[in-house]
Length: 204
Length: 244
Ligand SMILES: Nc1ncnc2c1ncn2[C@@H]1O[C@H](COP(=O)(O)OP(=O)(O)OP(=O)(O)O)[C@@H](O)[C@H]1O
Ligand SMILES: [Mg+2]
Image 1 (cartoon, chains in turn orange, yellow):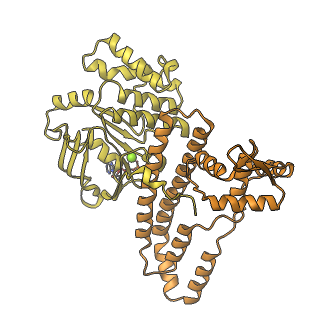
Image 2 (cartoon, protein in one colour; image 1 turned 30 degrees about the vertical axis):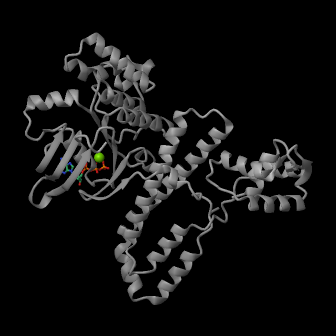
Image 3 (cartoon, each protein chain N blue to C red; image 1 turned 135 degrees about the horizontal axis):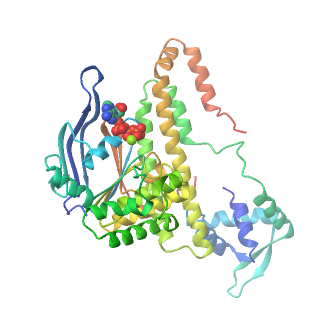
């Protein structure tokens, strides 16, 4: 999650102070990515170090303002233009858990899958309810539209997870016998498969 | 909500297809209550018994054992006549394969159950046009099924199930032929119908559509393996879901 670029995008609309950036960031993303003020100031300090923002005096209430620089604007444009990198996907705890479960015969992997699916679908029900509320009030402001998009992102990625779990379950049922036999009397193979499971294949 | 009498109550429902070597236990002891205002989604792998459950709930198939109560009436022991009336009046059914009558236009298909139920032809048509309008099909009212796309036919079938004041709406994969946005709006309508007091059962493979339900029931080999209840949405986002 790029807080850096998020802040640059907000500053592109005019000078702002730290607490204000935090508030706007959260209302834009519906508080899905809560920031603490500390994170905001550390990020601002780094942006300033890299000459992407500069201090811009104080407002009437004495808040220290920051403004985006030309270099900052260029960086922001590039960020919007550049696809989000998929080469090093964020480490996914669930993928790691299932990979480990495959290598551990004493773990009931179907139970792991079933419990996760239940949890994931329940979360989707909750997001969907929030989404229904958002649609009902008719999103009009930019913040409201942004919130709806963020909610839908959560729904779609949870859905991808639920589908993947269905797929894993069906796949494992089909493979169950061969995996069991191969692993029981082949400790070396098992070591190999654990190894490859931790090094997730990079997608390109 | 729970204080009301359930619109649909399934009790120890079993269904065995065939006998002897070819025997299939499609349902093995299902208990399910659906209350007014509630939308229940049924999920599960292909062959797990979802359509069987729905056709029995709609009185289109009879269970091997167990009871099916629709608004308190046991439909497994109801007379043919009672059953037919119930099906026309109280139960809206969306079939997995639409089941439109090819010789009737979209509007006539939708109006048919109302007319059979004694509504005047003019009123039935007016209701049908309104229901089609709701599905975004106002323009296609006078087309025949074979002059419409799969998704359009599916929406006609949904309009037919929702027209009139159905207390129980049963839908088998109603979004199968719809794109993501259209499927969503159809789900929104089903949800609204339930919020207005109907009871709904939705069979779907799509987690995203199941998520509109108050409860999701997971079927596997004819049994319920899990049920989700909705939790408090507001607590979910506290602390940030995606903060890690
Ligand atoms: N008329 C029938 N005669 C024999 N077996 C049947 C009959 N109808 C259904 N079955 C069997 O009963 C089981 C449940 O079928 P059902 O149609 O309810 O599955 P489903 O969950 O709706 O699947 P899908 O997701 O593929 O629509 C399956 O094994 C099916 O083959
Ligand atoms: Mg089916």
